[in-house]
Image 1 (cartoon, one colour):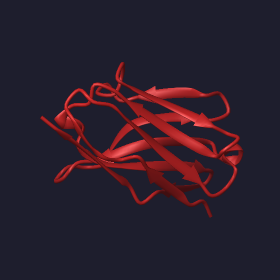
Image 2 (tube, rainbow, N blue to C red):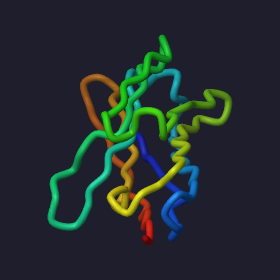
Image 3 (cartoon, rainbow, N blue to C red):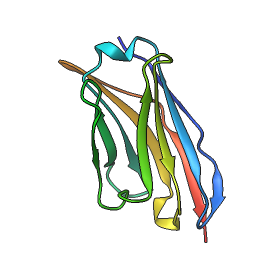
Length: 116
């Protein structure tokens, strides 16, 4: 079982920045993929960014490219999402995700609200 706890969500103005954190309850060395998804009110959950942990290969949604950066700290079992130049369209609950084959795990989410 892997527990994921997100933090760092907040209310920011358009153009602002936030850093989201996700702490795993186990060593992330045993996890294949971790990432961030988001869900806005009335919309489906969508991918923001993922990282294949062994190779550190990253994948970003088009909306996140050039503004968001996913990173990890294996010594702390942490995953991060640096977000810059935030827009009102980025307003959503952001969820941390982990794939430890064959199981997937989700955190409880952290709210990001971007005001115009």
